[in-house]
Length: 563
Image (cartoon, rainbow, N blue to C red; front, side):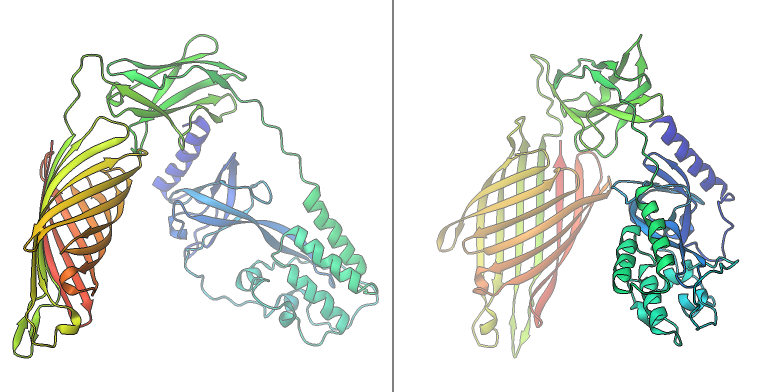
């Protein structure tokens, strides 16, 4: 982190800790608007704290104040127009840091206004009935030539907040009692409030074309000139000084145990120092190490050995310029460089974390009940177990072999009211799976199933797509078909709110063979507990539904061994 950004975060942290400093006096209710009090590159400090409702990561509008003149009275009025949106980067007790992540209509500046969309509405206060009533007191007679300037400068900010120009027809706000010329110019004036300068110029230009004899022509032309000045006469943006460039980086592969040293030759601009940030693949946080200056134009550092494992690691390098900016020279936080770590010659592969055994059992009731004088069972039991071996291959991630027992009983919905007995179905099957990894984040799993039924051999297949890392948060979608069991489509979300509490949420559509085409909808929730590094226990609950009369609950258990 550069000294500049560190200073901004420190300022916010100090205000958050003290809770007593604010750019404005604290109102009785939470502030809805704040003012930009500092601009430092793409980071802006605004005098809004936690009570304003700002949420880190959300986008909020930023507005530029502007002075306009009433076309009839000549009064100066305070208005504003949107520049774009900013991202909330850090929220403190009294100050917050916003980040510019997209192009704005104008470069942000101190004094710009920021609106918090989540703040509670302020108390009702007395407001003028219209912007015209506020700016045109009383008189309805048109003067021969507007010459007098008012001494006060009322604001239209409150009216702009409550009734944006886009929300209502401008003519509805024009006070009664004015003649046609006044009504025309006031209608255009109200329609420009809150608009960007270029849009205001376009509306006033159209007004002049249609009202060449208007007595307010001179004031309208002066307003257009003022707006054009705001559009075109901006201070030139200073050209950015040339940034540093670096030669040298880590190799794309290392041997296990080799030091992961970085030595860079820097040219193009003087630097104060820098950092190398590294992480394991898929990890959320980086480990940062300071680079040391070594003579003129060289910096050196080393990735911690705790990250140089057979999993490999990702890294990026940034340098601090004399102006306080941080410049990426190798990779970036969003797109780091990847380094593959290979075993030493003759080293046996590390077997830890490569094997898993999973045992699970489910009971599901699908609406067992008494119909007339007979009990109709609608349920199934599913027991499965498998063994997974993760492989040291970049394409083939793993091989899984397993077994399953399905025992179900039921009838089609159309035959429930008859006298037919429920149809049982029991299938014992085994399966083989191959898991392919076209990328580290997306895996494809294919399964082939073969089993026996009282009628003979049965067969089937299953395909799954997993998005995310296997042992972290991931989403699985897939489909399954097995003779005498049925067809099934499903999705499952695996996540870990705590490292010791893995959880699962699953939904599926199951068309059982014994139901003769009547689909069943099923939702499953599972909560696990990682008792040790190698043992995880889990319990699940489910609800199955065929139609409004035929549904029921289910439960299940699972045990997982990892080593």
